[in-house]
Image (cartoon, rainbow, N blue to C red; front, side):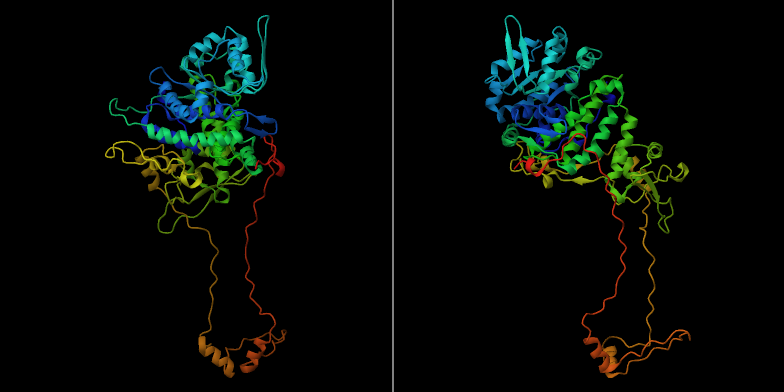
Length: 581
């Protein structure tokens, strides 16, 4: 089943969560994404009711419910979560002892009782549920419909009330984090159930996990030092998050979200089958982006936070499609939107065919079909390099309006142009985020693993995956054509050889003995220009000018790109009073 398993983008491992996950990966056979979402869920539970995200539809709480879906044994679900819990228990030791509950109650009464017993004055205190037997929970929860109702209310932080002849319980503002483990066939069994179509299970974020590597049993390195450093930084970030009332999405970031991130997710969940399982994908985009921001001790969401959230939510949607084949992810539609967004990001520079091939691992024929569907992309053809031959250069530029396209025969597979590198961009996380785990080194055998923790955490991350083989890339690069940049033709300047130059020209002007160039015939209808002063008179005339006359150089400034107003549907633009100090 794992032959076509989804692959998560490196963009998801951003910020503090990503750096901790990357540092821990050396010490576990568990999936990196399993460790990542377990850390984020525990962080969201500890942060509590305080931080919310302001949207046009109200404030959104930041609780994260995740499901690690993988085959028994080979999925290493427990391995991934247990490593994350070692960090969380050290970071939030009191919270771990008092508020972490192993086992999610499968009845409404049992669930509300757990919350009520820890409530203070009727208001719930944050709780983290860890359900390692999610298969049993799904089976048992079918017998009590109230547990589904209470879970749905908890996800939205709404009041839960349970009243019978024997019990009268009421809990306000529940804040719950959930980590659940489940086998693929049992998570797929939710298909068609009331809790699936009614919205209980689409409040969970499922991620596919499987064994990432094999480590020696008796020679494994000790992760204690890494865990201690990670716990310290996670606690500092979580304490900051608890002090934040509201996480803001700045206007320019909200516009980028509406134009770039939202269309991709909407395309992926456009089918009716997929929408019932991933209906909360957009809400999770907002929650996850806020968690990424808080982990970096920021109360404003950045575009990079949404990029990371998009990578994680997209992986979850692909997980659903992998486990539930009947759920169509509308992959063709989402690829069209992804390519359009990728080209739009390059602005007036555009993208080469090679950059698009490598970013999405698509063929030229697929690219032609995608461009044919988009009337917002212009295909610009340049010139071949002299002496090298080959096809002319091709660039795809976003215009935002219906554009003229070329026929398929004008662009063939192999049109690889203007590549000065391998088409990928490398960024160093340390340049954009605080150096949190840098001082420590890994407690490992220096001969087999000489890298420091700083090397592991802050090594450059390749933005686009190299999916093709080296031979295939060499075949691409062999056909690369470097286009000559378009430039205006230079106007030749003619210098009169009879005129003196340099110091001799100045002496000639002062002495009045300047060499007179050959006279130019003037038509009879045009009056000759007045004689120019020479010698001392010329110098006096020059010095007497109040303001020197400077030759005007014509400048051609490209017209500014028209800024289109993007409707802010999900986010309310923050006012100056609303920005947190």
